[in-house]
Structure formats: structure tokens, C-alpha cells
Length: 76
Image (cartoon, rainbow, N blue to C red):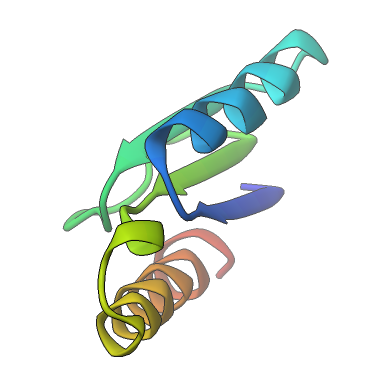
């Protein structure tokens, strides 16, 4: 995976994924933090969270989980 994006809502995450796909990247959008590895051959992974509408401490926790997933599963 070349690029990882953490979005704060599904709509904007979809917009980002669509823009990357239009440029020719193989993109997978995940709804929430994935539990398993990223699919093989993915150029960009977009993790869509609901962090815009939840308490700040929970939003930070979820965003960090998404970041650690991207780092651990995708960028090794």
C-alpha cells in the first residue's frame, strides 16, 4: 500500500477514495478500523470513521487505532 487515509466520516472518505480511483489507484475503503490485513495489491486504503459525531476522546482513540492498523498491516 502506498497511501493510507483516515477520514472523519463516510461521505468525505468516499470522496477521497473516488478521487484516487479516478487517478488509477486500486483503492479499498474500510468502514471503521479493519480487523484483518489489507487486501493484497491495494494502492490506497481509506479508513472511514464516524469521528466527527462522537466525543473527542473516543474520536482520538479510533483515529489512533486506524493509524496503528495502517502502519502495522499496510506499511511493513
